[in-house]
Image 1 (spheres, rainbow, N blue to C red):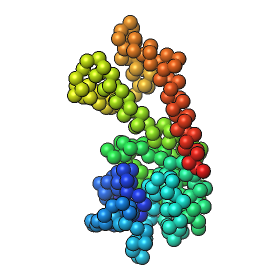
Image 2: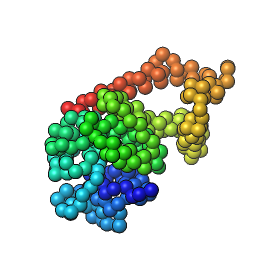
Image 3: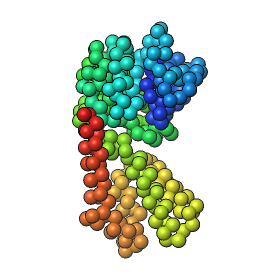
Image 4: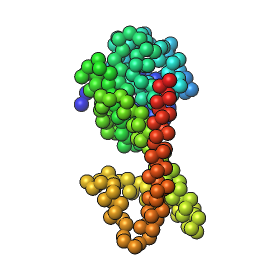
Length: 266
């Protein structure tokens, strides 16, 4: 397979660096990442620089990936207006709609908005992606390739879905980590030593996720498979599935996160 074309990555935090690592593994043409908080560095395929003004004049990226915090969009995006007519703009900023990105960059920028999640760090992410109407098939294919380097990709033409997507899969890893945290705490409360409690909690969450990924059965069936009538799991699920249990709490949590994503649109 040919190398990924040159990319200008704006933001080199956890998600930006995870994406860059995936591109380097797949093979990428000489590219640039910008992050003012990091010291400059250089290798054959990826140079990290400290500011937009340091981008070499001759550098011609095929894609610009915005991986900065949404609160930085208004200051950051106009700095890249000079690339509007030559590169597809791929944004992974939560809550910032395509129309706002277009207004900040100007020109005839072709924009793709995406929401990945942190399992991208181990190439197990899921990214839901929405293109603007004028994005070409070639640009869409490039964005798809950039995102598949960190996991699975799903496309939608309904941009409104990206707010609940942000709440569910974007924030979802935090909810899973909270589950592991609470399992560990509950195990300790029942007298299990901390090291064993942590091992049990982590392996249970990770193993259950692997089983879910490998199975053709839905989550409800897998849950029932673990639940013997009259057994211990059934007793625990009676608490978790009560009217004021997980179902209601998680619904409120997702609704709150979705609302916050919409607020970020400003």
